[in-house]
Length: 566
Image (cartoon, rainbow, N blue to C red; front, side, top):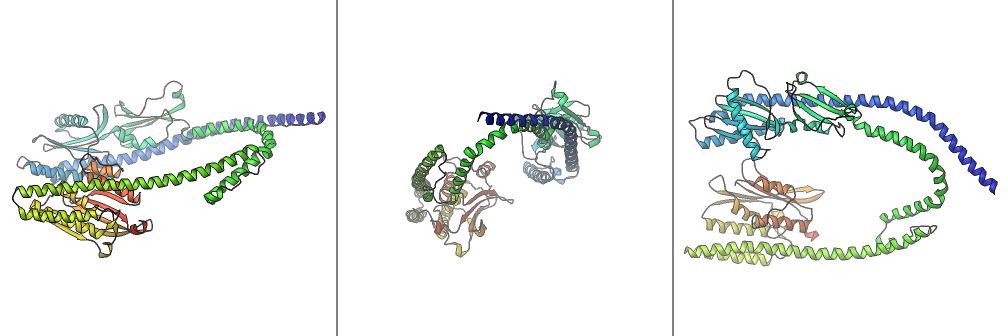
């Protein structure tokens, strides 16, 4: 027995020794191949950076030329700027400013929204932004001061070009032209200029630097590598004279770039595999049948849990009983599944009760909102002696309460909501003594679609409260349209008006899934969104938009099979 043990030990040592000796030439070959791989990777990485920069320069040159041409043409030829004359009024100036912003907005579709445009008329001392502001008000004032100062300098200049400046600590490129006392200028932050190159992998300490034509640095994304790192990073120059850009691009790039980690990982994996393959080979072979094989059987049985019911899983044997610890895990796992099933049932029932309570609470929160408005209006009419109008308002109030008593359900027919909204509009026209042009275009077959109660009236009332029509009378229209979503039938309800539209911050919050403030402002919209989430989860659509010709629109998309779900 002792001789047998010695022979086995000697055989393992001998195999290990042969393995180590055979590894030496393999290591030498690997080092040589790695050296060639390093040089090739460095070359390919530099080529990739150069190609990315060339594409970037070509695209940026086209944008800058387009912006420069647009600024030149606008200030010299655009008839919109002719409106800025001493003979015209402030109203004409305001309209001209709006028209100029529309033209700039069209230009930004092709050149990008990072370019900001400003207009200055020195005779009328009018300075305004012709595009959406992307800076703080402090920076806006600094830009205004800069433009006005430069207007005096560039009058009479023969040529124009992109220049660099620092405003409020931020470097910018700008192109400014003054003609006939009118100055038009385009600003773009240096950070936005180099943004397309930020996706290029330059390494952990990579840097992008912009230099003007005098080789003076005016912007860089980080500090240039120093010390030993400076030898590991390539410094690539891209002169502005060759690319047609108003600046020179200097890039510090990792020699290996995206391939550096792969190269290092390749080297470490090779050495680790060479060392561990000898040590782990015998160990894995000895322990496979005693440990790994039973665990594989356990894992295979465990994966079957996805294809069987919870009840059946309680009686499933996950192990072949060869390892005592796995048998204990099997018993504990069965108990755990049973407990999880019980807890899931309890939590599900609790969530159902909670959702029902929250829906009722939100409905009750909306009801006083309309009721108090009706009582206030009746009180005002009686104070003015308008008894006939007060009687009509009392009739509406009775109809309103009758509808509320029938609206304790989660869903009501769309026809009831439309009728309720029309009664409300009739009273508003009588109370305000103003005409409200109302239209409803919904297919009769959709009047039976079930929707949450007090949904439509919330948005109609919001229009009455906030909309300021740009015409003589307020116009409200309710339309319906069928469409498909995820293979299901949906009804799109659109409520439009000809007012001033929704504030941009309100639209942005709705798009980001945020609730509006509930401290008295737009509580109707906030509660409607919450009710829709509770009743439909995420199986609905809600949008606020502003129409091009003025006015706002509320768009609701709800499933038509609500009756089946409820």
